[in-house]
Length: 270
Image 1 (tube, rainbow, N blue to C red):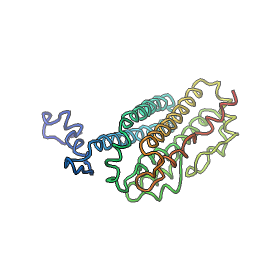
Image 2 (image 1 turned 120 degrees about the vertical axis):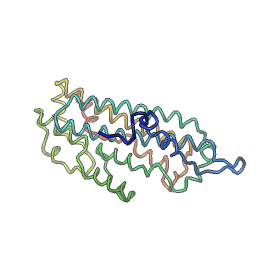
Image 3 (image 1 turned 90 degrees about the horizontal axis):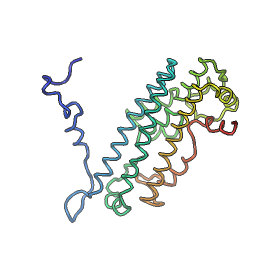
Image 4 (image 1 turned 30 degrees about the vertical axis):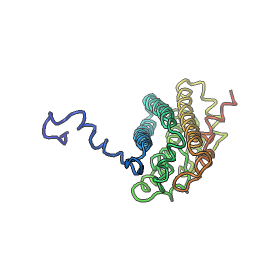
């Protein structure tokens, strides 16, 4: 494989990671009339959200790999990648601590400059939701162009949950047809018949470990949602979000809505 450099001496840490290009991407839009400079705290806001988008990119990369591994019945490898995603999600949650060092007044100093820009416009986070089975057709209308096409492909594709069900079915569990042949463009709903199969299969340590890891993933997503809601509430209270969104009020409606509801429903069976 040829590298885009004339010789090995040109291939450095900075060129490999495109550090100059990366550090040029933090462009503040606010303006402090007193100093003639951007508002101080806008840099933190940009950096932390760019970091989140990079983590979303990596999580999507891992999720696609997990679906492929499950399709090849490489259960142990899939579980290893799932654990990597869990570590990333823990890191994402912990980064909320950093942005919460910004007071409401500090955020207000540049908020008006954000105009219609809003975290609700993160196509990658919507892709992640779709990849995990949290699918809402209305969200498709929020995106156009390349982002819209990516999101539509995710909406039409099987999810991690579907890959999991087909993998355990091929490995001997009698997963009901209603679960195997569900419409992958619809949200995942509880299936009592499937729950009975999962409970019966829990005596297999391999299945039990995989189920618990998927439950950890679901819990990690819910933990991220909770911290995000509280961060928004702490920063802007009950105000509407940027871009006309409902802010914390909408985010609160997403709490306690698991991606894999059957994995939570079976807890009462033990």
